[in-house]
Length: 109
Image (cartoon, rainbow, N blue to C red; front, top):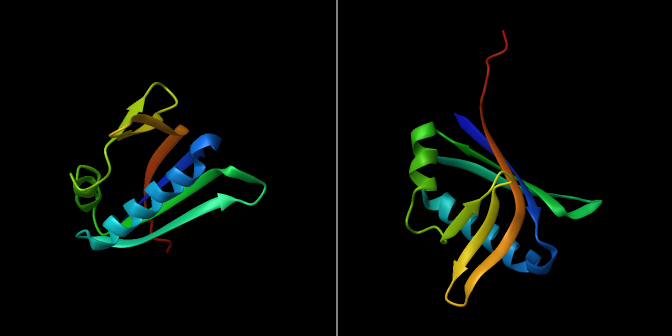
């Protein structure tokens, strides 16, 4: 199994829209091949700082989902990986910073 952990720093002006995006991607992931689980966590002392933790059977399953055309259209820009959603009205800044890393379980003897 493989787990992706992503830090999301939310644009305060678009917090509701960012949460809708996270929910929508969670619903889509649940239908995808190889999906195991997903949790969305937000800091109690900072409502703009959240993490998504998503586990997949294989890295290939995860990568297939990340490339899925069903996912909402997004652009990632710059060193902080700023995330914009592409809408009919134009680009909406959802996350001022994102950072993802992929982990695998290490068996403990």
